[in-house]
Length: 76
Image 1 (cartoon, one colour):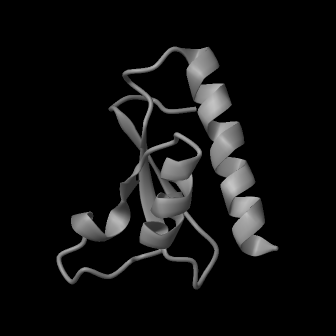
Image 2 (tube, one colour):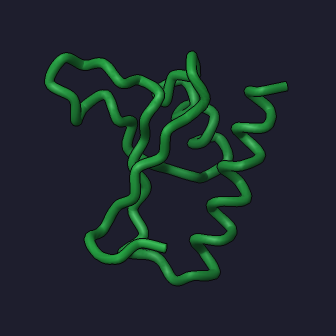
C-alpha cells in the first residue's frame, strides 16, 4: 500500500518490455507510464509506473484486473 506520492513502480518479469505491454494494455482500456522515460540511459524497460491518485478504489481494482489479464496473456 503506497505511503504517499502519486505513483507506484512495478517491475515486470525479466525480459518483458513495458512498452510492448503498454500497447496491449491500451486495447484493454488500461494505461500506465512505461518506465524507460524515467531512466537517463533509456534502460530498465521492464519497469512501469502506475498512478493511483486520480481514480477511485473500485476503478483501480478493475484496472489492475485488466492489467493482470494482459500480463498473464503475455506470460502464456
